[in-house]
Image 1 (cartoon, rainbow, N blue to C red):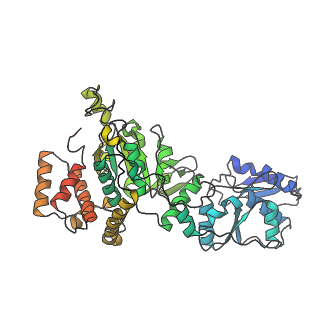
Image 2 (image 1 turned 90 degrees about the vertical axis):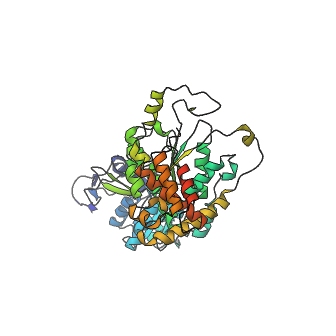
Amino acid sequence: MDISSRGLPHFSIVGLPDAAVKESRDRVRAALKNIGVNFPLRPVTINLAPADLKKEGSAFDLPIAVGLMAAEGFLSAPSNGFIFTGELSLDGRIKPVRGALSMALLARQMGLKLILPGENAGEAAVVEGVPVFGMRSLPDVIDFLNGGSTETPFETDLLQAMAENSGYEDDFSDVKGQEHAKRALEVAAAGGHNVLLIGPPGSGKTMLSKRLPTVLPPMTLDEAIETTRVHSVVGLLREGRPLLATRPFRSPHHTISDVALIGGGQTPRPGEVSLAHNGVLFLDELPEFKRNVLEVLRQPIEEGAVTVSRAAASITYPAAFMLVAAMNPCPCGYFGDGRHQCTCTAGQIHRYRRKVSGPLLDRIDIHLDVPAVPYRELSTEHQGEKSGSIRQRVLKARQKQHERFGADGIYTNGRMKTRHIKKHCKLGADAQAILDSAMQKLALSARAYARILKLSRTIADMEGSADLLSHHVAEAIQYRTLDRGVF
């Protein structure tokens, strides 16, 4: 910051500020005037370093105001041991900003204290080891820095926050029938496998998918902070909920653009794949998505992260999610349905299915037929198994995989590479005979062969079996609907 003693009064901000940052001149000027601080009547230049990185947002208001007051001698104590962030209203109140959790992590890394809006204090205090002070107005900040306030660091009870925000509204017991589909989703959760649900309208594909997060392992504190950080940057955290302790479920509409799905913009920001980090990304009506939108999913599915490069910056966001997709068997939706007649021609069906590319299907382990539920099952009062019971079996299987792959940096069977498959998916004579027969009779591809071995390994883990037995392989083959030529 430079406050010159010569020249006509002016207030300039340099360092690639966007429109919101440039407008901070007027907000800061009005806020200082309304709290009784005279604005300097000489040239003022604010330098936002590094100068080659574009600055955006209103979070610079508070640090600019504090810098001006320090330069003018209104602060008796040094303010260089703090990180400041916050938007100023014209009357001096401090309004909340996005990304408070990321700023708290930066403050801990630099060994500094953090002063930010009071509404963001709970979110930032999730990070241990950094003093967080939530302020309501600019006079409160001045009073605190001048030693006239006994403000203590804001504290968040992490265990309580995790407990209060870890409940799910949905439960698998709500689903009538579809026992085969429930079993397949349990296998998917146990092994971290991607799933494609194929069935007519109203068969329960969306209902099943929404309940998948309820049987995944509970979020660890590190996972919760990672997930909360992404949502904080986008500004999606709800008031009074400083920590996301449930696995996210993101369901973008099929009209979404590739930038909105993968992330981007003039200044790169997270997309839906990053908002689904540590949770589930659900793509309903899969063939209706634009081809170029679906193709950008390859990198995050394989690597669990996505790199967004733009002229202004290149940023890598986390994107480790389970992909669950749903589609109809044909354009009208009733091909193979015993209760409705399909009106589609063979050519229409072929074109409909070709909208989903082979490389994308290659990354989906489970292709599952979800038929319509008969009325007698819908009308029954019997409730199915609760999500909590299913989750316990998933946890046991995940623990075996963690012990098996911990040294390799992967934690689920769905992430196995070729070398892992060769080492951990050896078949006995009976199991090999079943798989050989399936490969020949169903003309399965090499990629289907690898997927069946992965699924067999997960099913064996769920049973606590070290060996892959014939019934494990037989069940895995049933989860390759498209390869079996059912549709």
